[in-house]
Length: 144
Image (tube, rainbow, N blue to C red; front, side, top):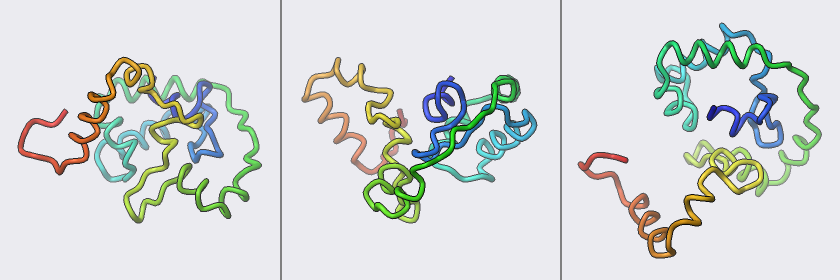
């Protein structure tokens, strides 16, 4: 489940990275949030495309699963430090006023991300070519 990549393997969130706890929240609340991300009435650059890929049955199943997980969140002891460190703040939270997501939103709290094995299988030329492709403005071609 993609949720656990950012919200932690136990759904308890990664507070230092800005990912909230999902474990133990009411299923109705979770469903509503996913529906709002899917409809676009709740904006968040990472969550919107993920929610748009879900149908109603998947939203209900995910919400029920997360609601059943135990909820005992760990205290966030780093939030004050992060708030005063601009580099950590950018890496963890991004700067949404400039449309910059936090690095950890794709690369995870350890920085390794989900694509490390894929990237290892690519040549340096392929990595550069793919990076160049995504750096270009969107064309009329079908998007990946």
